[in-house]
Image 1 (spheres, rainbow, N blue to C red):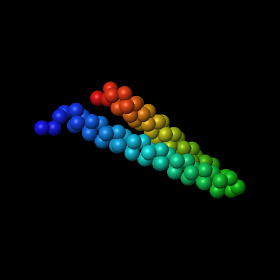
Image 2: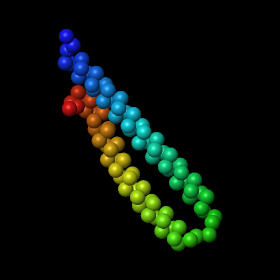
Image 3: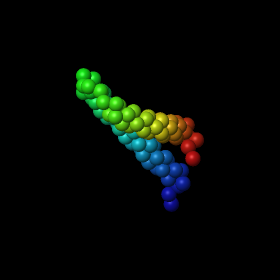
Image 4: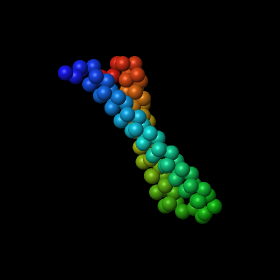
Length: 91
């Protein structure tokens, strides 16, 4: 018979791996987006300005900022869950 504590330990380790992978995925996406934004800013720095393009860019930046806030919340929840796993208080 398998003890419940072994199942709990296995479950916690699985959760820890999943949370760590999710955290890395979010951070990688954020890093890639920051690189793309820097690239676009560099490309556009010497070009003539078009106000419609600026409006579209501002709308896109606002959307991206909203996604960053959501990702920050997700990262905070992941860190809290990993901390609880480490403390033995998860679940």
